[in-house]
Length: 248
Image (cartoon, rainbow, N blue to C red; front, side, top):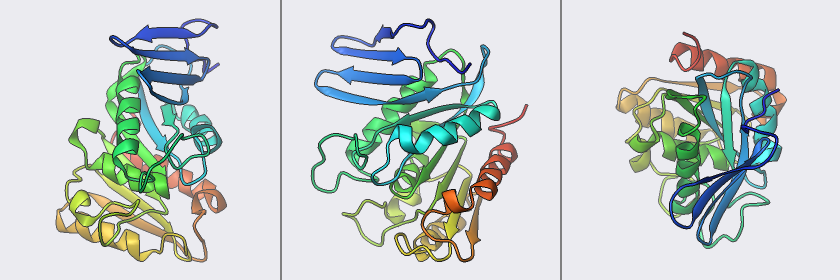
């Protein structure tokens, strides 16, 4: 059934003074004082432990609208999916300055989501991956560069690096910290995040001898994850199998 709660009612777990984690079916909320985040958490039937993935949405999306269809597909593969609403979502909350994409606030949200994910008894915390699209791809690059995230593999679509700081995309200085196998997927006609941005990322990964692959789709634009969904899902699955997130 994919129900993540221990009962049909909302479950509340206390995480210290002033903080709490609540689940209601496949929706969750975490509150710490005045700071609150929310998203979805979907897992296969059974006790696990299952491999898991954090899915990060792009500009104007939400955990529900972007990650739901991905979560249902990943569940078929035997994976748990967590997603959180970021500042660049329709439900992300108040933003300030350049808080979108790879930002301090969004990294805080993603890292807390990963912490919550790892605390679930049905999750194998040794097999966690990350996937993000567009603004979510920028954030995923940052997660892959953060040792505390503990990722085993990372995948992005329609993402890459900025040549200087102050933008939603991270710079090469961030990407230089990546040590996890990294799959880059890009539409060759992407005018929102031009393909040269992901070439910059690959160049950094190659320079640091990080396992990676950059796959492009001729004639496809920014929404390659939708227009070539069958192939992109296959790319993601093969990457997760290759680097032992999926499989025995």
